[in-house]
Length: 233
Image 1 (tube, rainbow, N blue to C red):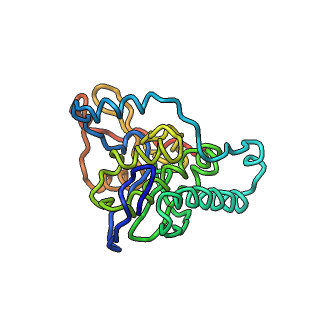
Image 2 (image 1 turned 45 degrees about the vertical axis):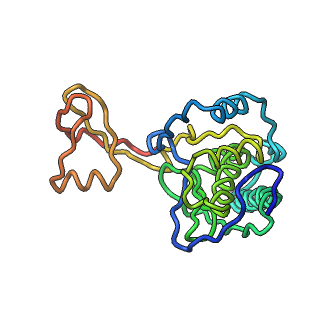
Image 3 (image 1 turned 60 degrees about the horizontal axis):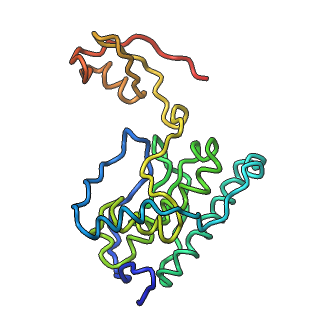
């Protein structure tokens, strides 16, 4: 396939492939700096160029008025918009499935083996506009890159994905979100150490500690001791 955006051509993918996710900074992977070459210089210049989102901005008032069922329907429509735009690059790109079963700190995930995109229902409910305008294109960019030639070997947030985010969707290639994950990933069990740093445990980790597992503070190396359980909001 010849493409004016100079993305790699489509290639066949296996069914059992890794997934990618938009997560909070604590779960984010780092991207090594690019070598100082002419291509790297051009890449930095492109990175400084003003960006204009390709998808129309969502209406926050309208999104706020939606109940959960209507909100999820609206997100599915947004996914369809992003997919149709991606088909300009790869006309044979399969339409991804959409699920709302992602839990924890991640907002979205392109699950290639499963065949679609997963979203965090709790974080969607609390960050509606950001999901429509940022998370959906982010995950669709992963979905597109995977189906391009060599996509399986591409780094999750590497050059290919960044190019799609900038050149196709007109967005800054941000790899982490800043959402409040306290309700999506509750950690009500409070532990303290020798340096008085407060540590929060999930129910699973708390149970492991009660069964004898030992955890230490990364700062003072002191053993973490259970203090209290915070009441839910």
